[in-house]
Image (cartoon, rainbow, N blue to C red):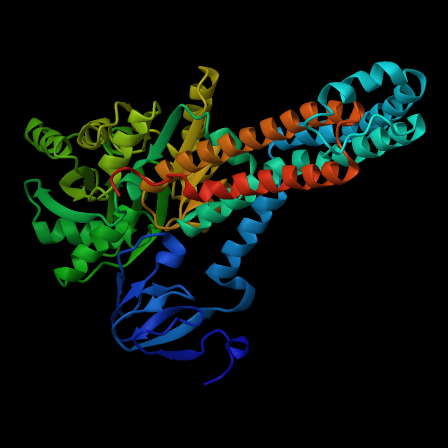
Length: 521
């Protein structure tokens, strides 16, 4: 055993059942269930096997694991969470800037009022004493028989003491600190504090499809071949060319070819056509030009196909499957249908967002028929389909031009510009680093139920901020006149001032008692 501070990348760690995993790593031997509630807020343990990534400080529940360290020290997931929370707590939301502006005027105003109180007691003692005489019977600490100068000094000092800019200054950051901490505990990492204020007013949430609404683990479900080609040939050609692509659908085709133990052709002159497909040549006998992609790609290259194949495509798309066409040397060879299972909580999360008065939409590069079939399953009414990656930003801007306050939820590199353009960008934690860096909020668990949690947290946090500011203003509006009238002894003023600040901090902590969880959990 060695101290955790001495761990280095690539060190091997043996983690026994019931022990905490020392640092982020990857399982090299064994399998187990890991309690990741500390990181994701999900109570159910997650099964881990060889090749799976694990998070430091999570708990190994059952099996014996051998883990290779991949991140140590300040690079670990937990360190990054702490950094994000600190950054969030250090930012100022717009309403805090408003409070700070008031505080900047508060001190000089209090100095003027306290001086005015002293002068009023000196020059108008009879008028000022009227208040003391009226309440003398039930406020024993007030003595109208004291000298005028003494009463004037008491009023001056009490006014200076009882005035409390602290409560105004604490109203926002205390609630923000508690809110961001609660978010981190529940797998909602808030990078920018202003997102909390903006998110409460969001009226439209736009979701990417693959990896956001769906699991992002697509599988080949059907292969239809054209005359003159076999299923094995279609899969071999498709997998050979997709080996050069990084698209999630490419992984599904390659996995399928491995399951069928199909040997791939060597490819060259590979070209990725953004939002449409890929093109390359393969070293077959003889060498062949292969196109894999959408109808649009085939049409642009002058490749036609018969009505029977079109009917097959339509039927598969209506089953919420994505259809990829394969052409060999300018002739359609077949189609591959790929399905990506919908995440378990997607339907319930969409339903709850709609019940909260928030409209939902899907933004995807997939074909319209497939996108509409998935949207119908999960209850999304608005579908923006066949949108190229560089056009996603335009769709977000178009919604904003129509007066919508938009949150964008995505996970891929092509979602990053849209995440930045949206009023609030929400990244799926299981997605790409670029998407996460572009977002204001990250959902660690990867489930879109986190969007519900984030919205509820935003609304409850801002409600506490408003309550704190109301109390801070109300206290000063009531307390300062009492001090000017000589009705507050300096000791009473000191207790009142401290109580005001304690009330604000206590109310912010009451945020922990509020419900931020989706109703279906």
